[in-house]
Length: 494
Image (tube, rainbow, N blue to C red; front, side, top):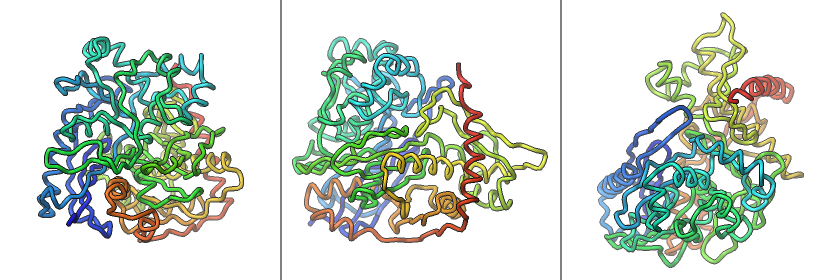
């Protein structure tokens, strides 16, 4: 009898494999980091072969921890860093250049040209703005600038995919070349209405259709392929959509925020895409089998946990990221200091690739504690910016609670600050591995491990709630200062 579902959570800085039992409890977790490659300012790369190697290692480790044989695992689900782009040779299976990571800004000129010539139409077709965040311009750059990728594309020997496609191709003995609707919706190449590759966008970016994977639902009763050990691979979601599923946000109006390297807030909008007038993304939330696709509005913040890592690694403020909380608690407030971490520009709701990071409000009074507190507050302020935009797009919708997940939710001060800045309760679930859990749910639904969405809702349980302690006047006053700080970061890159 099937005992477990395996979830591969392939993130920006590390890869994890988690085995979940039938009660959605994680029984084994293995994790390994991979290198971050910075060839020049604004460029971020990964070695896709290293990511595949780490994936194999964490799968072996997690199976060993649980004492699991391949026959004990009913299916594999994948959650992945969504826009990170890989081109590989379909014969040798080797990457033709380093993967370009979602944070990378080298495609600014390509995106600027798209905005200038077709901006409104791009948004209408794809639900996305022409921004360096997304995969299609990254692929165009590789075809133009990486000789091996360019030659492979010309000869028809090169395949493209986001990290999910790369892993599924390597995991399956059939070398399935697929992606799901959530990942495809992050490329600037998929039509948001039809959920198929858009010929007009392919032509504008001069991308050969033959390079692209087949778009599938997020959960498929017919596996895309089998591992060499005979385990079906049948669940696939972009990591933030996986967290939405793991938080059981299956009703329109339900939302979650994931706090990791970046911050990602999704709001379920139902079976019709909602166009944003406030700088948000219209994206696919999930599609299970033959059921209608469900859409979401998303606000993506590039730098949140990465700011804490920057204080640790670049400035040497502390030796572990968790120590930021104690340092921030050493002061009662931010001392008038604000940090806007626009290291790669600003994402939602601004979409300003010309912005760069700034620390403002410094006086002789300020010290490390104030900077640490300002770093945590930057995450909470950016989340408020996104939620304000969502509420403008969805007139009549009120935010009653915010479900949260991700590594930074272990920081009690940050969670209390978030509740204070929003004026609503912030709720953390008992199972905080919601990204991996969503991938497991997608795979489990495909094989009957979970019968339906009601089963998944029943698994969600609250761990802790932070109630707001601030007044509306206090919230608005601090946010006004934050917006002044944001304004100082704009127009920095000519």
